[in-house]
Image 1: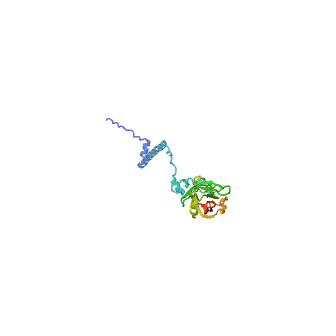
Image 2: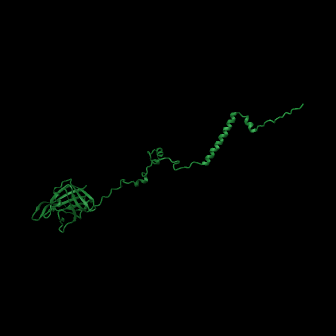
Image 3: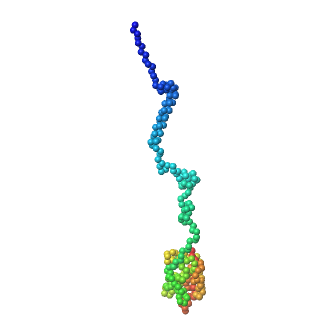
Length: 256
């Protein structure tokens, strides 16, 4: 009888790693798979970060806006950091324009008068310098449409002293002069002097006095005293024998 030869196959050998994995529960194998995948993804992300590098810091990076800084410091809306306002610190105090001076400003200097006007009377005249004659009398310029300024006296707008203007009341050749109105000028009326420097200096009438020629007030020609203006002309009765008026009319005014 022919013997049947049986072929015995060698047992199938499973690699140790796989056989060990096969013996583990399914949930454990799934966790291991996801852990491996997560590790791989972390490596990829880390590689991208290393390749890209840290973000570059732009002009606004890390800068706190003024409004936020002001809110944190208690400043007003839109105030700079720290609540300080430019130009108001101690170092800027001396540069602030318009601040009160520590001493009174000096008064402007006087000026030579070149014209006079009495606006309430509607008259005006040019003014020329004059002085006293050899006999000590005050020289009055001609014609009566011109007024003289006693040049040894105070300038117009001076801080002290009397500014003296003198003019004829009239003349036979020219009629009434500009100062003919002085006999009627009232307290409170205005007098304007135009200076050689272009300034217009205002005065207000405070009084009028009429006295004899020999009684012309001497304080009109003394230096010093408060600033004032004196307008002088002839008045009273006309003496035909001497061809002169018997009185003088003096109008006083003060700066305004």
